[in-house]
Amino acid sequence: MTKQTREKKVKGLSANRRIDERLARALADYDNLVKRFEKEREDLTLRGTRDFILDLLPVVDDLLRAQEHLKDQGLQLAIDHLNKVLVGQGISEIKIATGDKFDSKIHEALETVSGGQQGTVAKVLARGYRWLDGLVIRPAKVAVYGEPPQKEEELGIPPAIVNDLV
Image 1 (cartoon, helix red, strand yellow):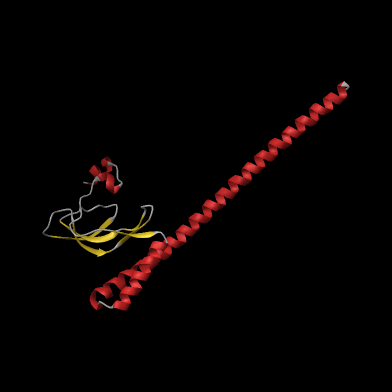
Image 2: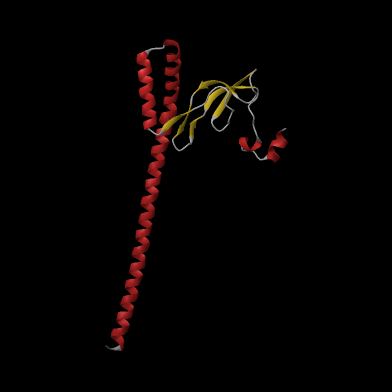
């Protein structure tokens, strides 16, 4: 084998390595692009589902209020079916009861009432819902005895700013 032949082989191998590296980069870029599109598709689907559920929950509230007054067996069957559909979509009701401690992460205090132990739920005004992974879709709307406890960190405001507000 001559020197020129060896040099051609070395140059050929070097060119092949460069092509292989470029191909590997292109495949990695393509893989990242596919992953990004998949994530965006999942986000859009979740956002659309969330928006639909937020529009549907007031209807559920109306049906529940109607059932409180009517006590109709057919309406209860429809409500039960609707609840099964919600669970099938990965949504569960936030279970709360009168006397539970107020938690600003899952409750929204709409009013305060006197009596009872301060900072506890006096009445559930509207059910709250969350995804099965725990993320709150809509907090439960409640009446609270006394003032609901609020700490600076629950408000998401640094203490220095809260002190300036007072």
